[in-house]
Length: 397
Image (cartoon, rainbow, N blue to C red; front, side, top):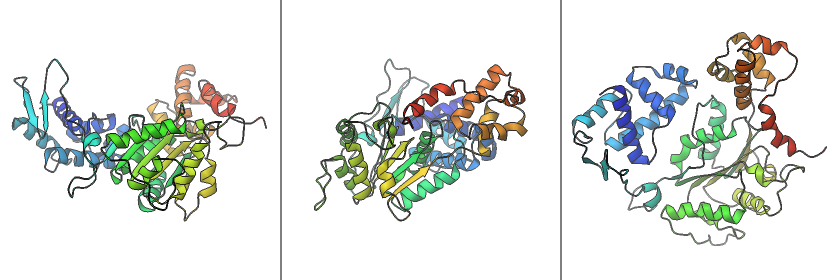
């Protein structure tokens, strides 16, 4: 089998087990493995840390091991898949259907192969004495691209959520700073700690009753009954809280600032959205094992009121990258490495801003960083449109 055949087989196996294809980074890791590359080399070519590559690879080997029913690792990956091919478990030579586990798969059929009902959506939460089945509803989570090293932030977040049972958490910072990318990476690393993982975007914010209905439908699709309210507790007419108390859930809400009013002090809600504040407050105050993560350019006022070192409510202000931002400039093909730090400082290490500015330097200054920095003017270019939203949200003062 050549490299492409092995990658195709691995992708098919992962798709059958998870309903998702290999992402770009997983494919890069497998390709590098087949070419005999070390993790450090794969990390360098992918512009991310070696530790991150090892984490993704470890999860991938574990997944393939579960699919094949035997250990798969970096050293035996090709051999294991070639054994599958040779054992006729995955033989499409005659364009017939084959049987793997509980799945029938056909190649070159006139219709797409029918997969069995996904365990994510259909199996009961507990079956006999088995462990709870993971339910992931991440269609609104952006696909993971190149992740620029934020090891310290990731470690802190995992400590808070997994080990300290933080119930309400805000990750906040200016547009482009990397809140969503960090949260997506966090989800990939801790999702197996939860019964349900749900991501929702509030970029076009629905009223809370509509959002609650959407989220509760995920629990219904997961095959769990509506829980009765815990005796002696009140959920303030918010049925979602019953689910968060009954099951261990990781719920991420992105673009939370969109439920807030513009032109006022941060944290004031738009008319008709005040009940979001009730939800956030009750999630922080009630006893449960779930975690609600809020991604916002503004710190929600409920967080400010409830957070504390020994409290189950925390916030992480996200600042710009330091020297790690050099990977962005390297990826954009900028030379003159000795001047990178000046550009990074000028744009405060904001990943999105640096990507936009680096592209502009290539287009307008023929890639000359010296020429760009010699002008005292702060070039905004496409950054200007990005800054309109946060500027327009400010009060007159």
